[in-house]
Length: 130
Image 1 (cartoon, rainbow, N blue to C red):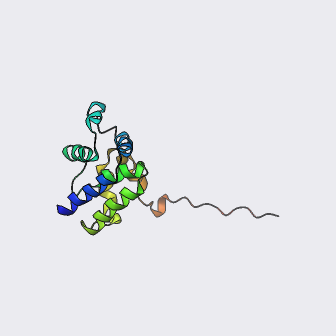
Image 2: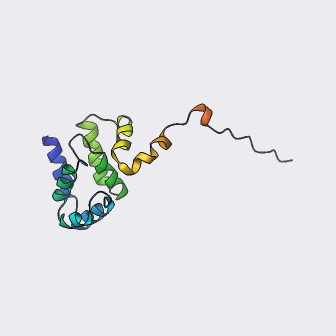
Image 3: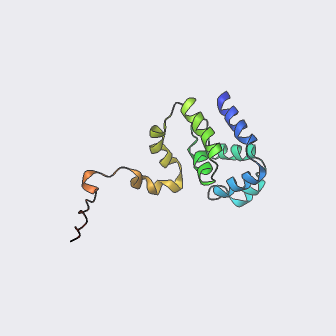
């Protein structure tokens, strides 16, 4: 739990008010506008995500998703480091559960899997020039 609190504290220190607005905008589908307006700090934002089951010490997928679409690789890297070192969850282990936790990603679950041999379209070689 101490590592998780430390992670959130570290992330908070690196989120400015301008960043917070961008992050709230990235998750506007999940935070009603009236509640979003009441969130004025990154700690309040994390607290809201926790209360609404979007964030937990062993469930960081939503946070990773938001940092990814908000183009914050620095924050995303910190979360991934926590996941791989503290939780010991690799990227391969995470991919299936990640898609089931992010509502907007569920529709892509079948697309991301590797196609079978039968599904691969074989292309004919290009015609030879005469």
